[in-house]
Image (cartoon, rainbow, N blue to C red; front, side, top):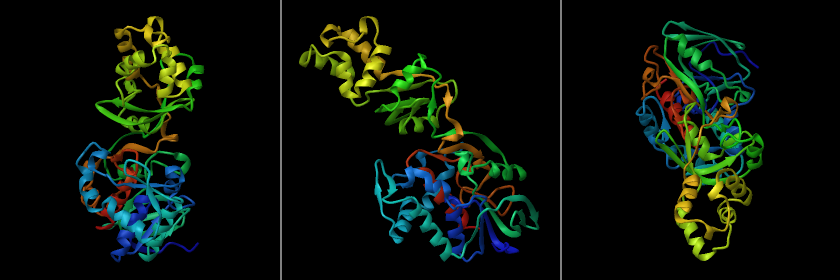
Length: 404
């Protein structure tokens, strides 16, 4: 591989979603752009996302889909590079895609179609991308920067940090971006794993591990709530605890020690339904009726765990109206305290990061250091599940690339 150029207009650290969009935008403005990444591939997180099909944006992107210490910060960038702008690029490159649900757009074929599109755009913008490049030191050079790397030294007028967060370290995630922020006296908010499965120490209500294992693989649509937020999507029982879209969504709002409440039957009033079954199918057993709403195994185990004494599973005509209400309350208001999460190992995003109060919402430039920019997951902006984090990467990358 040839040595690095001695001087460029813009160095971007990180060849992920935000870094590549920033490179395309800056390059198309005539800036001489160099992208550096320590990985062996471009866009590793893009390639593995969405089960290999990349949920590249969401048609219903709104600022309310994002968590941040400053809820208003994301508004400017999202309004200037919208989901429709990225969809236009996808269409220009004839990348086939479809809506899976809830506005989530996925590639018909492979996530590599998105990476190929971005690389093609980088080539057209004359952005130079170098991999297997470790950054040893960043120092000031006049108003610009000098980077000492494993491939040599390079000077630049503007530096964009697009190194992501701590999620999925096997993909090469590091805290490098936070180190750069600290180097320039910037505040970083505490980081935690977001969009991540819950772990449960024992069974679903503290029972044996065997009962939890027996539920693994069963899923159902629920409404899950914590800290005045609720999501209605699928929940999956696993060998370690709970996962599925509903759990990943609420995990970003949960803190250790807090309870989570789940409505296992959000689409009907269970007491009324069971009363109806008393009239129509009086000899049917409770667990059989619930098994038709979920799965036989799930209904069997939950009834055995939760419905005891007078509420134990039997023919529905043997329950009084108050008992039906009590059974319904159990399934509509299951409350539990997760023992933790699976952590960064499986988390889709990192909560926290570079404090957005340290950055311009228009340009992503650091207030304390002219020419230094942060984009993507490295900062304290985290989207919901469903393509929102990619849209933030595109939008913040575009914002920085428009001003470097």
